[in-house]
Image (tube, rainbow, N blue to C red; front, side):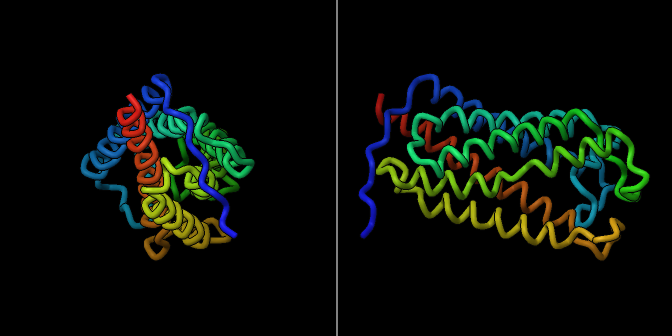
Length: 221
């Protein structure tokens, strides 16, 4: 027997403001990332990681972009916290918070070039890798989607939530499978491509949540 839908708490003014910041930050992150593809074409997007843009002449933009992505994750978590009423949802919020910490670490520490082997990695490179490994946004997205869609207020966008979360999960699995066991990358390894698909899928889910939270506030005001 299906569980009955619950009535969501009204979106507060504070939550709405965080949702707006998440949408603004997410949009700016996307624009910066697109710009870096044009400004630093030496990094082949099919196999070079987006983190490597920090090594180029416009590296500050990649640092800023990572900071903005972390802001999106944090703001979305704050905005939907009052809407979460299940253990699944709270676990999702914790994972989203850990992911934001990981992205912040990646923002602070510059990655090593992809040609550097794990044995020769610098301190900054190792810290950046640790930050990247903490990012499990797709898992958080799935758990939070399950929790949010128990509410009647979030049911209208359940297809968008699960589709974007599902795409992010698939992209994450494929991305992980692309990582060579010996740590040696080349044009035949499409880790860069699937890494970009993963980031965009994560961002789409975050923006869907942020935009809907803003709409719910306008609807209740």
